[in-house]
Length: 179
Image (cartoon, rainbow, N blue to C red):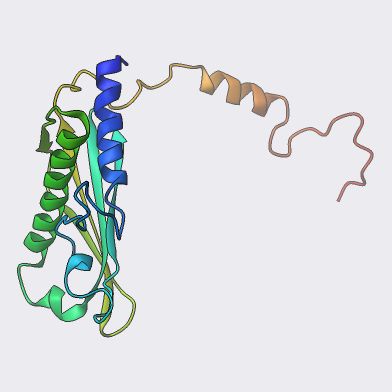
């Protein structure tokens, strides 16, 4: 991988690392990403548990968002589109922060639809996990997955079976009782 491509991955990773809960920007202001934990007064209001992480898969970045929500938000309607908007806000933050860190811009293009999983923990409270994949511009020539191996697994396994694998012949030095 060239140094230029490595710089893109490192810049995006640093942008994601700068978004921890309670972080401040260069001007001393709290970082605004578009998450629910940023709403309200942190001393007076109960804190909402939500956050995100990123992982790199070949030429793309996968944004995983998780949050604790109330069940009525799921049934209200438009829930999947609101989760998509939150993940889009995170992608927008990553691009903006990347520009601040490196002085260059990076393009993130959505690759597919958002995947949302909602899990109940009680009758009122639920956890939601959302995942969306974005293609990173300028790194499209990186192969996403290594090609499959062409080893002779069949031959090796057949040799194992011929030598008594899985309870075939017992070795000559085995002095245990049969039974």
